[in-house]
Length: 433
Ligand SMILES: Nc1ncnc2c1ncn2[C@@H]1O[C@H](COP(=O)(O)OP(=O)(O)OP(=O)(O)O)[C@@H](O)[C@H]1O
Image 1 (cartoon, rainbow, N blue to C red):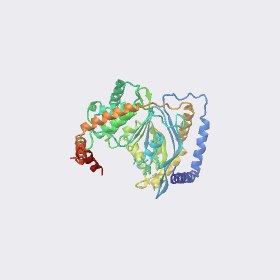
Image 2: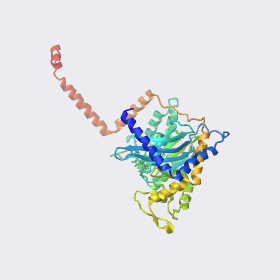
Image 3: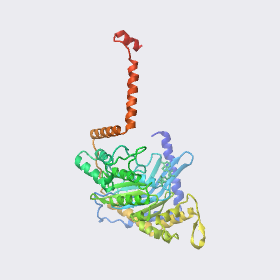
Image 4: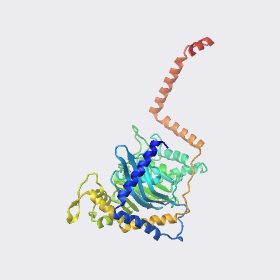
């Protein structure tokens, strides 16, 4: 490692220790850490059945993510978050913009950027291990699709590239079609995706194609970063209900973790668990259906007829620093509200249940590391990529003519260099000087 990188990482480590120490000295935090150990001891049961080998369960405990910045020094993005995600369940990560949703998703998927430093345990089936190939898939916030391909072609090429060679072509084709149907795109199978300047699929359909490309390998763990961004409420509901239904498909109990901005009440009802973050701290983790009660118990009841997720986000969004009404005591700042909720969550029975679940899952998963798969071999990948590239070039007229023009210019340039060179040995020597 380069010496500046070493000093940089030491600086982050020292700062993270300082930040943690500074934040852990409150009595609530000390209680919290004592309770982590207490719960771990209580949940030890050697006779518990082991987690089935086929499933993937994820736990994370006291996860911190720091980023260093030349002007601002070391900044914590996630501050000691703990949680779990079980197979067959949909976990939603919610919070105001910039609270660390994508960072948590990246940390769990093991794809944090290199300028960040992570501490704490993220365990797969109770093991500290990287997610094996084919176990998980990550749908990014932006759609990166080839505009000239049809939906069927895009998904089928991906199936050919990502699935191992021992799976027959007919099954790869069938898997691609099943994925398309699962995302409700059967009517658009032969429609070109389209892009800048060429009309094709709608934004919602493109979002679903991105999901198809990831589910075609039938991963056991699916990460989705803002799967409904840019969609209207009806499209968001259909996309999310399709995603939720993937939890129990193809004989796999799939674990789905999605960061989401502003779900409608209907979408909110699809979540099993909710992880609510604010400035990288956990405001609530537990059953989505119990979050309203948690807010009400702490003095922030959701007004009738209001979408619960809107209420949560409004209560914990400090970007605009609006004071919040609190009963007869008057108004308090959003920062204070967040601190109250964070403390209250840490001392709540909910938090104890989460710590208990994490400890229990880690014990059960012992001895069952998640097995990975394999992808197509190098030769198959070269052939498929060449075919895909040829189809793309032949359909992209602008690209095609531009390349032809470039080739003609290069050919003309090279040709004129050797024009009238002569055919004797001495004329070649003149050019060589
Ligand atoms: N690699 C990084 N380097 C520097 N800062 C980062 C990095 N990753 C995240 N951040 C900062 O951490 C904060 C949280 O970012 P993150 O993308 O996780 O938020 P988010 O909740 O997903 O936001 P949004 O909902 O707007 O997508 C932001 O202020 C962001 O600028």
